[in-house]
View (cartoon, one colour):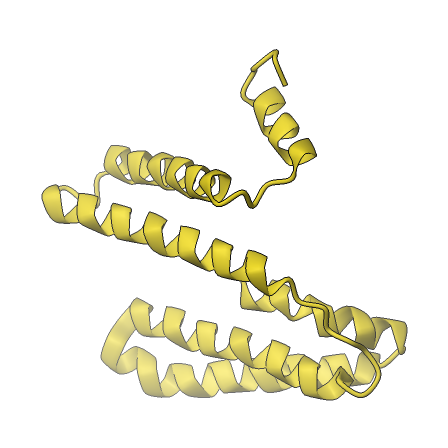
Length: 149
């Protein structure tokens, strides 16, 4: 999510032909990730690795923002951002609740059920919050085989 969020600034750097700057930002993020891995992974394992990756991926949009704020305007759709965040939070809460009810969480079938359920919950919440545009709703209906799209 954060790496893709950085594309607001990244595209600006591309337009300005500042590929060295982009390389430097990526290098800084990679070095931060590696350094944090040495500190965090021995204590927290793969969850620590996920956390350090999240930190380094969050660093890139921050660097891209400060590197482009004088030349590129970031038009961020904050209302959509909040809706997506809330849908993600609701989806995650539902899956965590389901995991608390079942003791076989590492079963491939259960993981698949959680993934499908998560997608369905996420899409329904976004639909209820009117996040989708009419053409997006039509495309969703078409992809699930509804003829009345």
